Length: 294
Ligand code: GUN
Image (cartoon, rainbow, N blue to C red; front, top):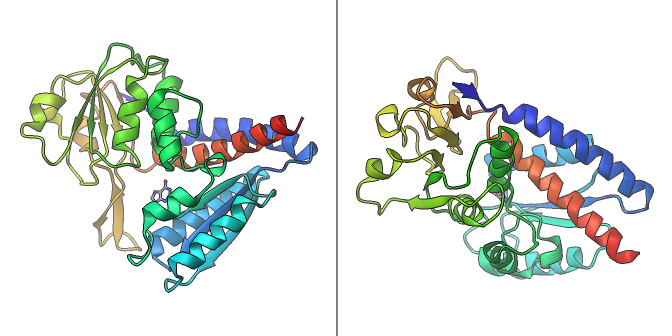
């Protein structure tokens, strides 16, 4: 078994980004990210804080915008309009989920695609699907980087994605079927409507588990030597921990660690890559702006 160490890869990419950010800053274009949090969901708050801290560490400008849960959709849309036309901001991130009275689709569509560092805007999604230059969504892009880092052959590989979310399942399936490297895979997407999950996972060379449920993938479901990418972040109660829970992924890591050729741990696998790719997109956005200004 080879462990795929997301922390190490993330640290390496962050070093590269730090240098790029310093060069851009010297040219008068310090990459800037606006992070918007509506309401005070504790998990969202800790993600947002982690994003802001990462920006500080890398020399990026971050604007932390926190608004009460009662914020109206109109107020949020006009905030996005302001950020769209603010030259100090190269990336806009609206932390999801939004309170239920706000239509997330309308909000995402209001972000100008040139600042859509989450890659969630329909224009970004469409371009990704067409294989055109765009911002790739952060978690699937992080997975691609991990596969690349370990030289895992994706061309011709049977990939089974478990989960069809707009944030992970659909985009990673799309990226891996593109005729490029890493990519060129034969991709199957399984989901809650799949009749016989094991018949698909058993023949997979690479399994990407993004179902949001512990033990979705167990050793009996996997062939010897498969590559396992675990995107799950699930809290399970644990009295031995001070905070009362521990984090587990979607796969039975203990059961699979000997059978898999490569496996990502949770935490420390895919997770550290997500924020790194957000920073990557923000630096890329600033770079594009800087090049256009020449
Ligand atoms: N909520 C959970 N994951 C994400 C993400 O990648 N981006 C945003 N904006 N919100 C999220």
